Image (cartoon, rainbow, N blue to C red):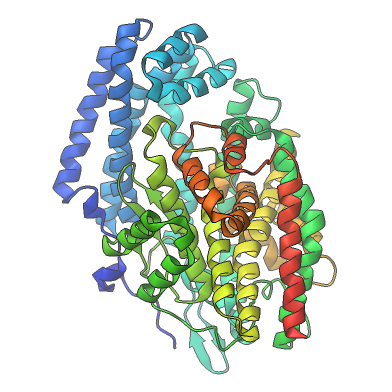
Length: 597
């Protein structure tokens, strides 16, 4: 039998991230937590009901900024340690310490925005003139004012705000603490299964027996948790609907897009154009790969299969360092030094272990380390995940030149730097190795990892979300079975009748934690649209484009997503960049057809 994943304590330390860069010891964390508790209480006592006085408001803003920085550090220390070892009771207790303090601290801080939004725009303008570093933050408060509730209502919501995160907590508990996956057997060999093993390895396996048996085992377990997971998700979106109505929005989608400062037509365009225009290219691609593997049918368990190639070998994390530094060298020496720091200072958690969160992400501590979570397989798709997360790291390392209050840009733009890195990495590798077999392999990886993941997997999640929120606002009945029906219908619409979309495919909605972050999924395709166009520009004219791109990343949230893209040279107010990106993908499939002919 294949071995199950090791316990966290059995993992070599060099494969783990170093959270002592935040607080050196657990005692330091607890001391900082106690100090934060006292400081937020003092902040409320000192400044609440005083912000109509200009001198008090000017004094309050830097104190508020410092408290937000400390809150971020405490949260990262608590939850990064838990994310890699969710079955560890001590880590859970440490995270709970933060949650208990934060539930008290949040309303002690939230009054600042509520009080400032109750004041005249001219007053906020004067604050911005006196403290220009906070001007983008104050401009955003002005934008939010028209949906502001009364002071009493806002205070009540701030008291309840921590509870609104509980559906996500329930989802994570079911996923990481309760689900135990059945072993499966192929050709007399028994294999262990888990979220990490399936999503990082088996789902991409070139052995059809393993790939399909692993999928059966995986979805059989998910099905047992369908209803409780549905209730967690439906509770989340119901909370969003209630707040949308309270704040006077016509729909829950309008409310969620308002938080991103994005109009409805931008989201709908991403979904509708990709569903109609990208789908034919992706169908051609999957059929090409299936033919190469000799499949007599293509099921939903086969969609993420890549080309079989002698180049499909595993590499070590250290080998990936030089590969990525070389591939991203166009971004400059300082960017390369950031990559070295990520490895040398142990910002990256490579380990595969029991109880670790799935997928990958980057969490950057303001003016500190960028922590990257992976479950390293050494395959090319994992190298591209690392390139992606280093894109987030580079973005937020540069954006830390802004105040933490205008540091985190709209979700519509957030995936542009990360996906641009994936395209740059593959394009540079294609230039360096003209071997047709390598070209075919890497084009397949670029399509199946970068474009499939961001413009198919996440885009189909977005189409699913749009339908769910629409039915919610139409007061239609929703439960686990309805969610599965919606998901399967969306997938079937994209892939068409030549693909066998099984009932298991309807359960895919259960795999995505992004549903607990509002309308996040569609932004991957939006980011990749910007990222693809930028990658082409960076390669064609680096002498004029690189500095502008890095300057754009430094702007943080000081501009809207549309203006950030325009500052970099991409106009997303038209459908031109999206159609250019789809044409680029079509060209990749054309090239792959030639190479495999």
